[in-house]
Image 1: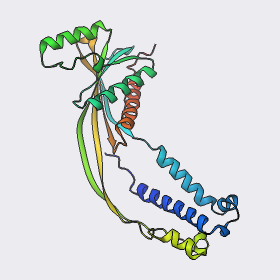
Image 2: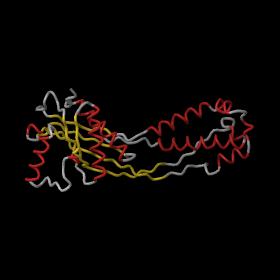
Image 3: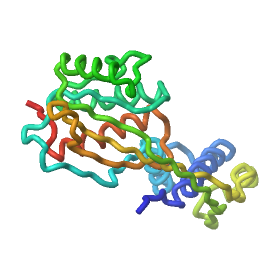
Image 4: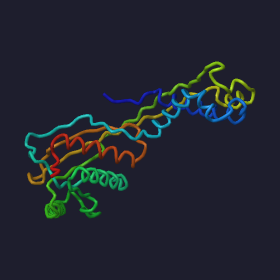
Length: 257
């Protein structure tokens, strides 16, 4: 079952930003309301605390990647693999470079030697050509790699949904800006109602396979993962690399020595 982001996240975040703007406006335009910054936050410590907590949460949120399923053959070696070549099967050079670099770095952090196919395969390499394929196989074995870890995008889904508008209300004296016209005007102007909007959720499904080069490239482990609305390629690369390498490690397939 697909994991969906809470619909209230954007609504609540926007409310917090409106609250902060109102607090700042009231403090600036009606300074007599509070004699000092300490008194100001003392009177609004609850609102300020919630606002800061939510802002830290939102700013710290990164791309989430979840493993949806894994498989492991009974022929897997007990000691795992110590030198792995990472190959991202993508025609997008930027995505290929990011994924291979981040996955190789994540494996290296776990004590495994890892390299990128970008550093091994020539730009004109044709995997369908038997001669080229045999030459690359010899080159990979000569470099000491015992396994190849491939990653590929197998599906992409888009879903448009409506996020309803919202309006928050609390009477005086809960908020100080009700105490003066300019404080109230500055807070409420343009902030009476947050209109709804449509947003499109994009879900990416990736498949990763680990092949044993000492056994004629037999498939040893396979896993599928998904991510919803990745913040950026850089953010996704790091999150995907950690999730993938953790799963392979949990399967006992990394020889960390």
